[in-house]
Amino acid sequence: MELNKILGISDPLNAMGSKSSKNAKIWLSSPHMGGTEMKYIKEAFNTNWIAPLGKNVDEFENTLKEELGGKKEVVALSSGTAALHLSLIMANIKDGDEVLCQSFTFSATVNPIIYQRATPIFVDSEEDTWGMSPIHLETAIKDRIAIGKKPKAIMVVHLYGMPIKIEEISTIAKKYNITLIEDAAAALGATYNGQKCGTFGDFGVISFNGNKIITTSGGGTLICNNKKEKEKIIFLATQARDNAPHYEHSTIGYNYRLSNILAGIGRGQMEVLNAHIAKRRDNHSFYQKLFENINEVDLFKEPNSAHFSNHWLSVILIKENSKFNRKMLNEHLAEKNIETRPLWKPMHMQPVFNSYPYYGENVSETLFANGLCLPSGSNLLEEDRKTIAEQITQYFKPE
Ligand SMILES: *Cc1c(COP(=O)(O)O)cnc(C)c1O
View (cartoon, protein in one colour):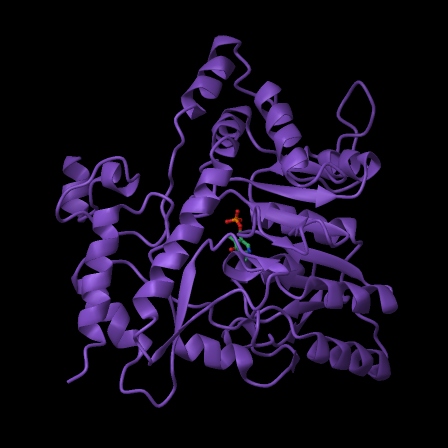
């Protein structure tokens, strides 16, 4: 605690949302324990299954599989990024291959393309769900084929828990016979036409990082089609040891499995997943009411009933040509100890990626310019909402 004070870090108990005080910081999205996590961790200690793997990993995978509809297989991994990396290896992405990738996302979607020494080809978003534009996707595929290189994979992202137009994207992927990878890192529990995000593509990825809808403190899962693929993923994720009494290797391996202790947190968290989704959706309804009378702001909403978002984060767009802007709102709220964050800065605008090809207009650029993510945690208190409502109303008050 002393060290935290010196470093200016606030009370970690408040970060957990388990305690509240008048000046506690209101976080964008912080870990929210359900209560049974310690029971599973203790079980691992009592049986000395600290490592490797063990019952918590098996049970966590079983409940995840069930949550995703039961038809797909899942492998628990050390992070969503590790899962994205292995999805590219499973798709046989190698040196010099081209991978079509949604530009409007977190860098973790793109980095594994570079790990594989492949080339990302960025594609813009469409305005309804902010997911990859099917129109620009098909233009990009045709153009790359015309140039002489057919892309080997498509990476799309369900942003902020919102299901994208995944059936249209899936139809295009099938038409051109290209592997489809779904980054559903923040979309656990979200559905499109009743089907869970992460189960539409050849591979799907979910993250259990600290700020996600549920957390294992750090972790992720790779969703695949069958047991054979699952076995291969486990093989790659555990150093690619061939079947021999000694250490024999004919492939490059990785150390990407989830620990049995962290999977214990995951088991407990799965018990509160639906409650967390309900709370996040309720936060979204709260913002809907709050912004009803603020004309300068549009709240990011499900475009129609086919899309069921987990509303991981509630996001607003401040209208262009308004006298208000996201930077000033962010600063106004930061002064009151309320955390907000701009939307993802598109990958084709990032210094590290801006030399790669880009297909699109400026949909993602406009979203970045005008959007702000608001506190959305499942541990948001009624009094937090009151503070948020007061401060937002004050910022947008007519003069
Ligand atoms: C969080 C996130 C990731 C990365 O997951 P980690 O578990 O943190 O590695 C990837 N893509 C998106 C869209 C994310 O939100």
